[in-house]
Image (cartoon, rainbow, N blue to C red):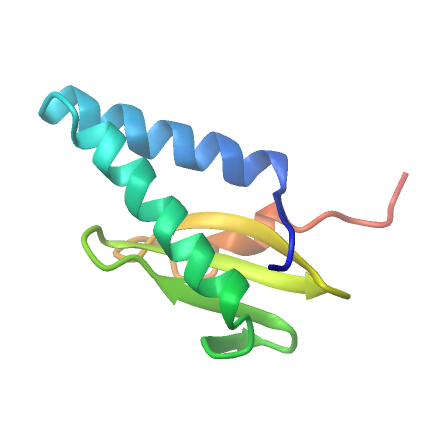
Length: 102
């Protein structure tokens, strides 16, 4: 299985979404995180199967929640760029990309 890692902004987005769902119904935040992990495992198993957004950046949708995982590959490593709500600004994930500027 290929390894994966989150960029820090993606971790923050996942936590915020989980808290939002938990505030709406007990255990819904945990269900969101479980679905997120299941989707990550689908990506890791077949990283090139999902929709291309821009060059090497892809998106895989969660099945139960209106979110997508935006990711790229660095060799064998899956880099998770964003956990994006699909009904918001479609290019908002770009703000999470690291820059080469000091």
